[in-house]
Image: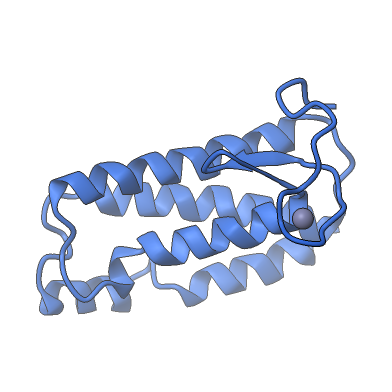
Length: 140
Ligand SMILES: [Zn+2]
């Protein structure tokens, strides 16, 4: 049992599962945590944005990325039993958060549509994440 979460339950309506992690000050069970992480990562992904974020927004995005990855790592290291799908998804979240973190740190890497399309065509494009998740599921 996570000492920070105690006996708290997931805060999502009608979910009665035990909380596994915290995201934006909300206690979440593992499946809702994973869902919210993916939502968060989609929202942050600069390749999906129409305009460049300003510095203040970037700081918030980096904090959100750090929170997603820290919490995912906590679950990984907590010793709680995880099935293969959960393991694959947590690993996927960690890898994707790392990728986005690098993207957000590159100065002006996605300031223009032309530059963004270079990224989208490049090795970091989104579909690789799906391939990796599929791969992670087949590991065992
Ligand atoms: Zn839940």
